[in-house]
Length: 305
Image 1: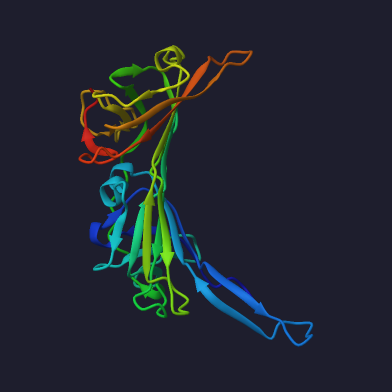
Image 2: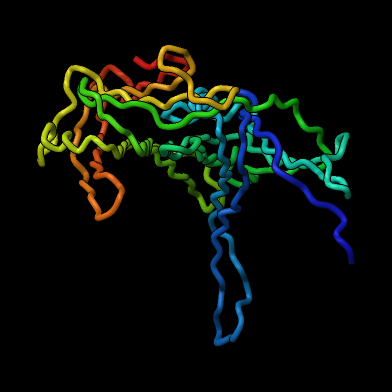
């Protein structure tokens, strides 16, 4: 029997916030948890019970600004407008098929959150996101599949982001090589009454930011005990890459800034090796809420100052 059809990655529609471009991957996991009933001396199970199921959808995008605009640091609630993930049907000669012949899977209720933002010198940032689905009543499947659907209109992705400059308590941290921003948002599914699907989510958050830079003298500035975040916010930039393919100048808008007003700043490590690679210093920022400002303030489409 020959292959009769195949599909490829297509659009992601985040519901309330619309289409996100620059999608690099998406997929789902059923999250089904089973227990085999084996009793009465039988060799084989006589029942496979599904007592819990936590479906999730994972996807990634190069459009960092769109991801932050949609999900921010606390995630995007999906309730009024479902989130949909599309697969484009490909014809037998390799081109996308026309008409309402495509597939989609969608989530009517849940939360979409950025897992982390990792930037490296010389590479574009790709942002992984996770959608955790919940049921409306505990027994209705929270992810559904549809056949013979049309693809939504999709804009072309023409921008990207990479590492940018960083300042710690107002002091420039030169030669940034790596930035890793873990928003630390945990989404715990809640269920009860013997129902298999979660109906609620419980959220906890503990962000952590790890930096690696060439400015090893920052070790003496911070000391082995580290420092508290001072009155001058620490600022982390992701540099925009324009439609011409080149990094955007500091004074031109389009960059992304993340600011931390409270927390701790610590030395993680220092690395030096025999050979041509220069020594680097690792710094960890653990943001804390000051009671007023966002624990991490995000500004998109800004200049680098």
